[in-house]
Length: 499
Image (cartoon, rainbow, N blue to C red):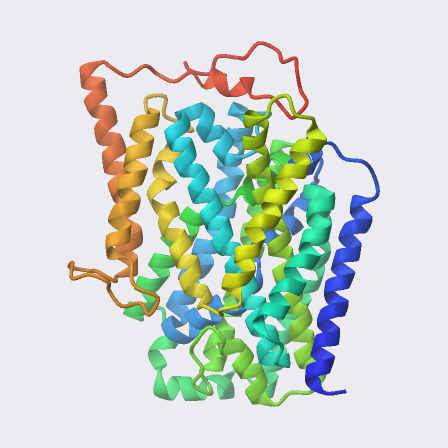
């Protein structure tokens, strides 16, 4: 059997196994609409930590971090690690705040609707769907590229195969099936990533030999004092933190944890696990520089160049499939949860089965253009940065609204919108060149820092202005406690939290 045929067989078997596991979990018991979306207060620490890490570690970790390592070095890798892991630590604390203010909530856009009103809600909804759509596209692009490199399979075929399999068990089993398969994939991902790194280092003759060409030709990649690396690392810290705050999957897991203590331990624990995993993934890019590979396919090019036995390539393929399916099912379930919130508002008299059917159909509709875009093989890192941009402008007003009673919906909406527009002025083209003649145009750090700075200044300045005019009515956080769980009819009187 040729390597291509073997790779295709391994792909089919791996996808089938994970799909079967998801369906078996879904068949264990009938689930309500509430269970389908949030599995409220059901998940313990171990399972929660596994699903948080697995859902965060998509196939992109074998594309983007190695590319960062190969181009920005250790400094860029450290920035990527901090940026990707820090949101987990932030959720450990903000998740407690959300569970306290909105104990029966389901999603970030639902909080924004009740806290800020329709305008900010629509903007946030657009940001969430856009970010998760791009994330889906990037993940599917990553796996399609990987299988094409290793087996010569067309991009579109892999994209259709993988997303169809994930659709099957995700749309049937909901969040509970997603969390279960995440836990299994976590057990697969961690050892296989360690094995892949160890094999690459060993095949290159040990660490010193592996990085010898890098030491001679690009020594700046091996130091934390590398200026461009530090700058790009800082860019990634801002970009990734902003984006992960709009990842509905994280908010679902906030509510899925059994208690506040479980939630804090799980998110803080995932912070400690994500850091070394991403660091190793970034080092793979530095190893790839042994042969001069420095694009988003650096790791896979390295594996091919080393001429390793076929079983090594198949191990890497299983790793990539586990990574991509762990993130795709999370994203699809998150999108379904976002849609359900709106469907319940638009069709309050519809049966839960009808709501669930419409939610599933809308999720499938989102998947179709994802397949078409993934078939083009765009740069994975650029796709993520594009999604991160729109999140940066809305980050401050959305999160500040959890604590400030004087931030109004109009303030939040306009500060976010202005921030996004300002960031877009500096954001580069796909080839990372500027698209206008403004000073600092094309500078990624400026394009991410500017939206946050502008939104902070607009929000705080507006609050101060209204305070001087005594025209702002403080928001009563107790209103958030009136949000009902799916199927819930009678609630106790809300507790006023505004004082």
